Image (cartoon, rainbow, N blue to C red; front, side, top):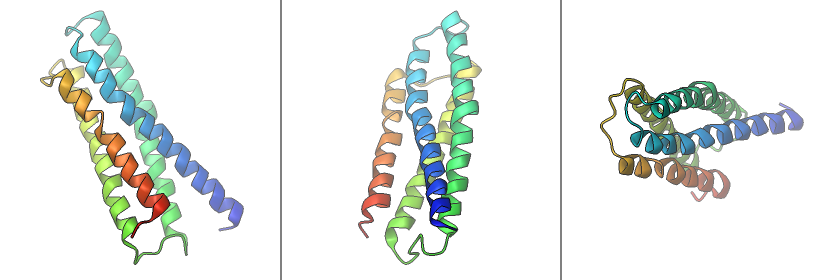
Length: 146
């Protein structure tokens, strides 16, 4: 791939990751607000729509794009030194981020069915997990400490 093509691919990957992270950071905050809304209330129904749209229209397509562009980048000759540990550690953290996405999707289904049993505090703590994972991923990708 030419230098310009590589840069475009990298840009697309970064854009997809930013969009995905925005959703991962916002959706648990919506869940905090949803905990305060009574089941069947107008506020609860509005939050259900917002949560569904955020997950289906932004987060999931962005996650898929991040994986597609990221895998494409990783498969380019010379981009990844496969003997370095940083990439493997980053991959573990990215998979943990995808698992967090899956959990958030499950929690959305619980809210959609008015079956949420978790507290506001739970979602406030859950809101921090993507941030911690993102910090680790960025440090590994930029600093490549090992």
